[in-house]
Length: 496
Image (cartoon, rainbow, N blue to C red; front, side):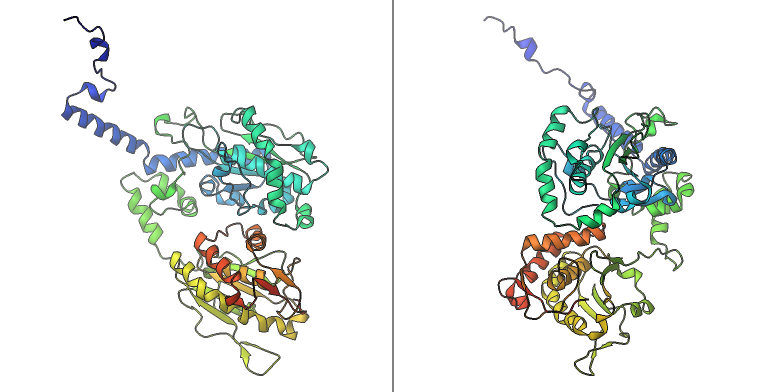
């Protein structure tokens, strides 16, 4: 029988180090590799790497003397609180290959406000091993800059163009993104943003400039004619600059929920020296003790109530920033929370129609999470009859009515309450009108999306869940809920 010359080549050869070992030895070897991987990604290594990268961020900030903005969620880990000017929300997914987009949910208009103060800013983010720059900085921010430039500087828009880093974005990908800019601009224009107001915030076209730990710091030679947006990647793809390269973790702050044990950037910077000097075995316990430690009134940082522009009347704030005494600062409060922490309602506001007082606080009982969003479907309909008497009150003809919407986070349920007011009572200039037999406006998803842009443009942290937005759509577009008939909104003649 002839021999098969292929027998030798078809034999199964070892393909890895573990396959050269006996089964028991192979198992031990795999465990050793796994243990080595876990130790290199330890909490102590992560915090040391974050601290190392933060030093670089500080150096860049001192070099350019521009305000520093954290691209959340991980940017805040790399920025010492004393130099942090704010936060932005540029999503990496909007810069992924073939999925480029301009987000109408995350407009990041607050960046324009910060740029207006000092003529530019530094946006900080990081990326994990395998990339030199996150997609959020290499593509999402450039797309945002190009769209904003076309909206705000119509005459110079074609000359400004799209800027992406050559070392990261190929010419082919750059061209494909540029081909979609007109579509992105139309998407932004559909929101009917207050462009005249925004033009006052940006004095010159936005120009993204890209900086990494391995690149030289480019000069800002065109600062007079352009506003530099420094896209700063905090983490290095090379670990040679670290004291112990084997323990350096690129993008150490990414996916902090998986490793932080509840540690937050604010808590890390508050106790940084203690964390960096604590052993790996003791770190989880130290973190838990600090996370669970009772907070004192002096240590709590209350987020101020934020005005929803262009209105002069409507504000959003987290419930933690509201005290019993501070409720006196508001004419009307809509509370979306499981319980009402203000059982003794403040002095109510009298109505002009009769001597019966109008309650000052409307409590919409809502749990947190999806259960609370579902509860909104039956609770949001109570807002219109609560607000309407305030708008009819002659007291507010001489001054704006002050309405506060609040929930535990100030970013989800309270947004839906504010949206009901904006869609039911606000005109295109942000003035609030009491409802009567006036001009009608069709309330559809496009109309709701435009009003949501007012909220997210004023409160960058606002991020209503999908369930919350579904509850809002059901209430606003249902004629049974608001007696509007086919989703039409009717206004009267009293503005505030």
